[in-house]
Length: 455
Image 1 (tube, rainbow, N blue to C red):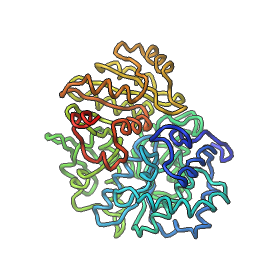
Image 2 (tube, helix red, strand yellow):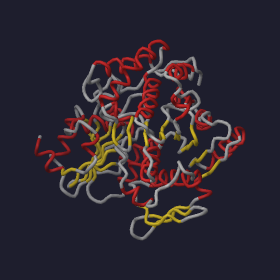
Image 3 (cartoon, one colour):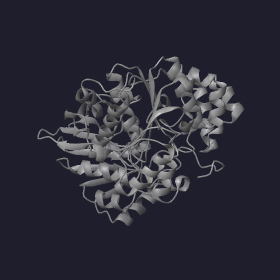
Image 4 (cartoon, rainbow, N blue to C red):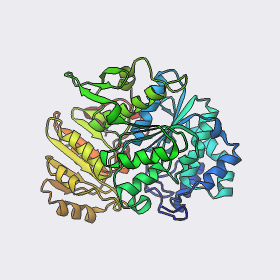
């Protein structure tokens, strides 16, 4: 990936369009307008912006998580564990589902919208001076808000790749690498190895690395760590996950057993938790440490859009999976549930969900495809082509996400199960269509009967 290349920006950031994909005020509209410049890899602009702000990141302890899938949830897990150890923690994740300020949180609560707007206003002349990108502006905002809020540390996920990502301008104490799979090939490279190389570009001399990559990448990762003099811990070599009879699980490390850990919904999510625990156990000092009650900390996790149950009776789940690896995890977990199962599916036309996704969708009782209210969404014709390509006899196309939700709501029974997936933008529009306006409103599971009765 060249720092001189420019690529199309995030699909769900519009200056004109339908909610939840449009700005709510003037300063956010300006921020959203930066997305039209596209993705412009490189570090010079973000370094210049931070320098003009007084380099606040130099005194902000930070841990960065990268990876094709799982980096957002791992970042949130790290933040929860550190918060419950007594630290004040900022979190910077992307993308958002409903409102842009969700990307930055303090102690597991989204930053105050007024503080977010005030910070963006402060950054505006500096951003315009250096022609910084949308994501570079958000990265700088996360740093400024973290410092102003007086946090002890920042848990941060990369935006895209690593080597030329804006987060690589920060000063991390450790790097976590979750998984590497094919995604964003037009930017990061056509092979797993090329994509891994971009993510490993985050390594700095002596920076410890903790990773859950597959066996075929271990040699490449180990060589990169040696090259920077970094200690490297592989999750499956220094820990062991053991299922318990009650549905919980135990994590065995070299020094301890963590008993009674809660099932976080998928094996991949449990693995992300194990990676976070392994990293903090190894880093253990006065700042980076695990809470006394690790299981209790994981019980209180809020992971929006990560196989998240939002409704009950019938049970509705939302998952942001958009590439073959992530979709495989979500659909496999959904397949294990009891009852008649319906999937609501939609995504971007430039994202290949993979043949395996079609095979998995064929297992369910019903699949409803729907176009998302975005220009880059697969339209009805393209969704029909997917159905034909995958030879799905259990699938139909609805005219919109709202129409699909109405169809499902009026035809499901109390014991049925529903999964909404295919894109973070599908998740966001679905939540909005069901009446929610803020992720905090979805922190607890609502009654499907009561929710749809209101409509």
